[in-house]
Length: 487
Image 1: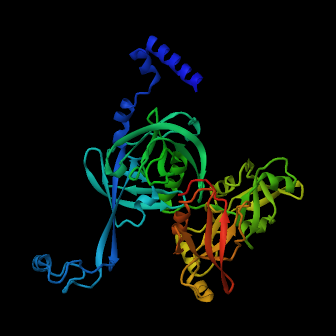
Image 2: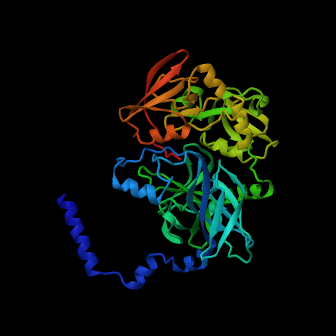
């Protein structure tokens, strides 16, 4: 400790004896003012309104019947106080409002933002930096990449200059402009923390990670480099508190542009599909399969009749290359396949029984959200290669028919268990009914709710689940939670 203090004091003396000049400081620290002045006008504020119909649960009016306050409210607000005689019981409409950001990509009013910003909106209002307001039309949105394209009727608008994310370097300064918590045209700065970052349940986006402050309302806003070029679209954060914690993620602009071009042309996005369930190749698995190093994507199962099945891919194969490109990690494969045009013929190299084998595969197509929803209602699997959560579980919501046959009113079906290090006897086909959270049993009714609950646990926690297996119910514990970011 003394040595550390002594070194610190010497440094202090040196700093005092040789102060930096103003010009030296100006050379070392970036100046964002000019870049912001030139490009701030391309950023827009987005406010959305969603009309929700139905009865809202209301409690009885809290005043005693003889309380003078009740007589006052009855006289001046007749029929408007919940629980008071004369209050209407018919359904009412409620408006849910949210905020986001976006940026202009064409002078005639095309704007890019996140899909989750405009999802379910009945009205989308755009506010420019010059205070003009326009109602926008949603031309299309893609939930898998979280990209949406909207349009306003305007002309001669300032247009964002788009950059090349492949030239972006880790450690490079970047700037985010948006409307966090509704504060329009807020500027925050940081550096690129990492590139090609994978997030849980995000199979198709190699995110740019930054430490620029991003908060609710920044979603859909641009991430600029120091040349004033948009190199990403701010999409999400990693947070235990709900606010900024130094981990922000942006969609690379080249990927976002590819998505918006499809949305503009046909209102939906086509993605390639193999029809396999894959898992990561660990060091132990690589050794057992005779690979010199852990690489590729291990095929856990193949959907009958899908593209992979027709190409001769088998469970136990390790995909090493797709269309001539190496598959370094398992997460690489869904991105490669998804970016390939359905119907394309590609070469796939697999590792099988100690040797490589080249196969020809005709890429299938992932159904869009509407098709997926319809198929789910029919009780058919739409995409066996779904993403695993922090527990390594791929979960699905049972159909009405499945609920009737199982005799349950809620729960989630375990479609796959992918974490090879998961210390549990949970198995495919189990139905998770509830989770012990803070000493109480919480009924599990959606994948999003379940993932939100487990996000509160650290990686050393033990989680207890109530599971339906066959005709019996049992408690199952899980030890070992992934430390990856959740959506």
